[in-house]
Amino acid sequence: MVAQVAEDAPFVGDTVLSLRSVSKHFGGVTALDDVSMELQAARVTALVGDNGAGKSTLVKCIAGAHTPDSGTLEMEGHAVVLRHPSQARSMGIEAVFQELALADHLDVVANIFLGREVRRRFGPIALLDNRAMRARAKEIIDGFSINIPSLRANVRNLSGGQRQGVAIGRAVGWGTKLIIMDEPTAALGVRETARIEQLIRSLGDRGLAVLLISHNLEQVFNVSDVIYVLRRGRLVARRETGNCTPSEIVGLITGAKEADKRD
Amino acid sequence: MQRHPALRRTGSGRSRMARRGLVARSASTGEPVDTTIRLNQGERVRAVLNSSLVALALIVLVGVFGIASPYFLTSANLFRVVQQVAVVAVLAVGQAMVIITGGIDLSEAAVVPLAAVVAAMVMNSQHSVAAGVAAGVLTGAVVGTVNGLLVTRLKLPPFIATLATFSAADGSALLLTGGQPVFNIPPAFSSFGSGGVLGIPYMTLVALLLAILMQFVLTATPFGRHVYAVGSNPLAARLAGLRNERLLGSVYVISGLMSGIGGLLLTAYVSTAQPSEALNSELDAIAAVVIGGASLFGGEGTIWGAMLGALLLAVLNNGTDLLGISTYVQTVLLGVVVAGAVAVDNVRRRARY
Ligand SMILES: Nc1ncnc2c1ncn2[C@@H]1O[C@H](COP(=O)(O)OP(=O)(O)O)[C@@H](O)[C@H]1O
Ligand SMILES: [Mg+2]
Image 1: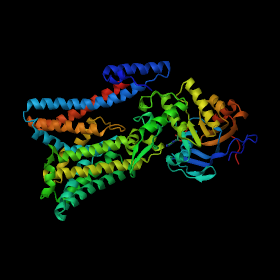
Image 2: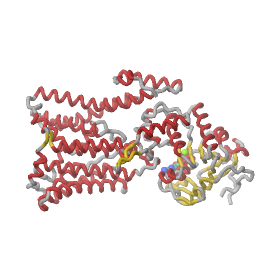
Image 3: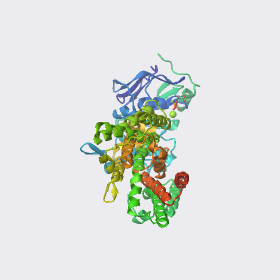
Image 4: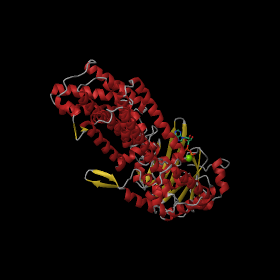
């Protein structure tokens, strides 16, 4: 447990997901070491840390892509074990993974609907309802003013920023409880970044829990309500964004500033 | 998004240049240029161009052989060509599915003779064509299942897994028969192999039906889409909630089933089940799929392209036979055609970027 939970934290939302003492090892590497955190509805939680700190591993544990070696996940108060990404998805958890995870040979619509295709049933046979999927994908893309040249363009023909747009569109289009974004603006220009930051805020305002992983501290301070700092797999601090400074966070990331004491 | 009829018609290399220019411009200004039509067009042009190049090669070959040999274009010979292509075509249907997932099924070529001898032996002992057919198909399904398990459970690379089952199936066929062919195929069954309707061999109709069915499955069903997705990016497929193992397992089973059917067709065609009869053309199905525009890296390919590829190989075989070109030269030609087809496709791919 992180000892120093700010007492003045305003109550914003119910806890959507909590991690309790989650650890994950890869061979001899300890990617996550006894990590506990809470993600609350209507709040944007930022997770920062150096490269290799374990941020993406944490994302994958929440998204069901990795199963923690020890520790538990609780979704709205109920302990859950995620053995496959489909389980996280069915609970309303969506992620924009750092590697984007798009099928390059498929078009934008197919990627947005991958694994949840709209089907038309003809007795025992289920066929793809492409028209319905296109219409819905257009709504998603337009609704979040994501700049995609064509819904029917194969994803491999898109620029890095556009690919990121597809991945983000997919996540926000489906997420109902928690949306995780692992460095979502890494490939974006200034203007697109601003738009995504706006989008992240609006997701929080709509009552979703958002977990943002970012190296861009300005962005973190712009959009987040809470900041967790991860260092070499260990959670070293939790701060209310309003009650800390970028230099303090930098110190915590690099280790120049000591970790908070733990129980 | 509106479509310009004028743009829809341009399908030349020139339009590709124009499209590249457009994309570059939009990237440099960063403006959201509506490239809807061009990108769509690009993908479609490539797919059509790919198939149409193979189709063009086919037409040229037919023309050349037609001129060089008066017998080539007779209906009797054309009947033979499409009859002979049937087995490879059925194998190519299964092979295409596997290759689209980024895998390969080397075992097909050995499952054909194994299913053939199993089917023939059951037909003879049970005096039932139906039982023999069921046994042949089942044999294919069993080997396909083993392939699927080796790939998904033991995580063997498909090349190794199917090389192992190739060997096992090949040896089993020889063991079962002591290396001897199985004769006395029921006439009802062999007449299916030689007969036809409206000038089309039954065998070809079977191949055509399976090809249409699988092309439909690939393009119109969620399963088909997932097959492409898992081949395009297995990690993305998994993170999107797909069950990669189940998907991969099923394409190997489908490939096994197709091999079993291929074995049955071959048995009906030659009226004998030879324990090692398909082995001379073991790479034909793979060649057909690759000529048809599939990538061995997965994520792309079509059944109908593979069918064109199979037909191209069959025409090449038949034509060179008629012209008295030796089978040794034919085998060399096959290599040239495969290398050429893939090289042309690569050049076109690179031109896109
Ligand atoms: N699939 C994996 N297999 C082995 N090691 C891994 C794997 N994923 C991450 N790691 C290791 O775990 C540590 C944390 O990685 P990661 O979570 O990607 O960090 P971050 O996203 O904070 O940069 C690193 O040492 C990394 O090499
Ligand atoms: Mg990372």
